[in-house]
Length: 222
Picture 1 (cartoon, one colour):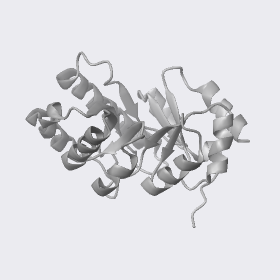
Picture 2 (spheres, one colour; picture 1 turned 120 degrees about the vertical axis):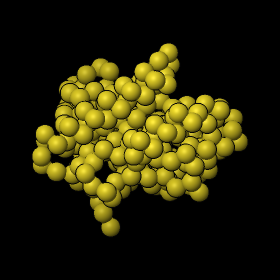
Picture 3 (cartoon, one colour; picture 1 turned 90 degrees about the vertical axis):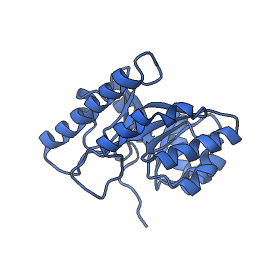
Picture 4 (cartoon, rainbow, N blue to C red; picture 1 turned 45 degrees about the vertical axis):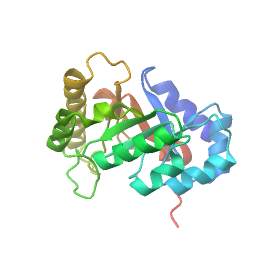
């Protein structure tokens, strides 16, 4: 079913929207099914799970870190991670830069911005992110490349609220693009939308959607 689920989603997504298959809690052999169906972008919430799966799976997988990332864990994924979606502090950005320098690579990242009504979710407050950008230290970090923004909507059945939050994230993206990255083609990503709300996210400007349940089925929580 994984192959069919993937194909159904890919047929539906516009060509400019990238599908990250969220493989968290799923064993490596299940990820391999999606890989054998031709998929290459996979998302994990936990560093140790990403590292363990990478050791068991083909080397051309593009691994996306989509969960909250602690600074002391960056070193484990810095050699290979494709995109870190969840940068939510200057301290974390500095750490990624430092680890990127050690490995001689520039690591692509997204700023996670808090858009939900739930205080438990991570992410920059918009005013704090603006201050960080205006201060300018990020411009001196040569081993990170800021490629866009990420956000998570409130977990609710209220689709109008979800739409409003996604629309807000897209507005934040446009503001950053206009003020800090007007001539940078790499600043182009808006990572938003999951299994329950990806269609709304795409309508509001998502370029990356993070989908797990619709591909792999319900998650296996221990």
